[in-house]
Amino acid sequence: MERIQKRISSSGYCSRRKAEELIKKGLVEVNGEVVTKLGSTVKPGDIITVEGNILDNSKSYEYYLLNKPKGVVTTTNDEKGRKTVVDLIDTSTRIYPVGRLDYDTTGALILTNDGELANLLMKPDSLVDKTYIAKVKGIVQIPDIQKLRNGVVIDGVKTRKAKVKLKSIDKKKETSILELTIHEGKNHQIKKMFEVLGYKVIKLRRERIGELNLKGLLPGEYRKLSIKEVKILYSLCKNK
Image 1 (cartoon, rainbow, N blue to C red):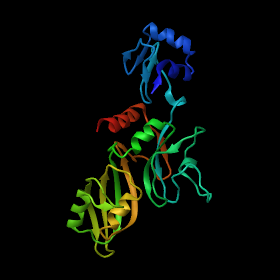
Image 2: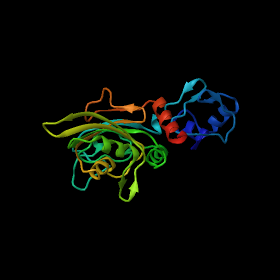
Image 3: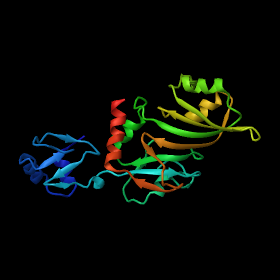
Image 4: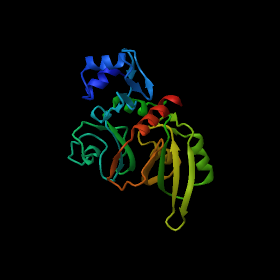
């Protein structure tokens, strides 16, 4: 949270003192509501209007959705000199990935410099849906699908209930493709969930985070999130 006059001044619109004058005159709105109290605070994603002009929040925070390709590490730098997800984003701002995807896992990944949102998304109780497509070795049996739905014990802790759908099987190659939606982000969680049931994950892709999907994004491509999308992410973190 940040005082509204500070946010206005940091945007470059005017000085903090001038911002305070505009607030007192009723010329500042937050999400469509007039704000006249100087102690009012705003959060990332709030739409601030000053004298009818919507502030550009991109100078303060940046939000990206990346379709992470295989063979890229989910860190800001790598001791082995491998390409990182940050290297794929064309920005001079110091951003960082929210959570992790394994080196060989692909799909949806958020990068930002908004620490509050990152912390909320990574909290175990945020319950933001994350949907994955997993290709595993073996023909997954119905009883095992029910076990995945009810939760399995990994690292001594039972996972929360998940949505699981068997999409297809290949009897010749002895493989199965499943869609899983989980609400947690434990280390290697999907792979471990299958492992305890005797299946090895061959390929894994994260399709969705909350309401964000990879539509229109090829591997390695990214896009900026809209203010509306950021606000929805905040609401998902705080309202479940």
